Image 1 (cartoon, rainbow, N blue to C red):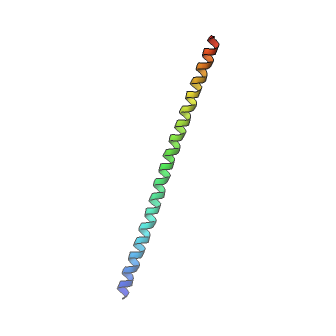
Image 2 (cartoon, rainbow, N blue to C red):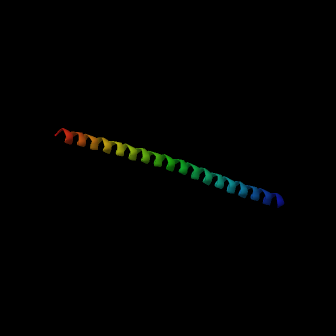
Image 3 (tube, rainbow, N blue to C red):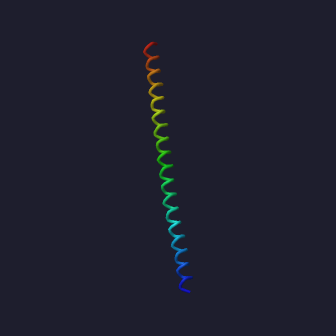
Length: 66
């Protein structure tokens, strides 16, 4: 009976450890994905600002020539 309890405890602790490791790995992967999304959003925002600056400069240039 003692051996059965030891095996059951081992299985329980192994399952618990596997679940904790899996949750930690999932959290890590989610963090990486969020960081990549934030970086892409920042790059897109920077690109939009540069585009807007180019448009403004073209309008000002056109206005000065007219």
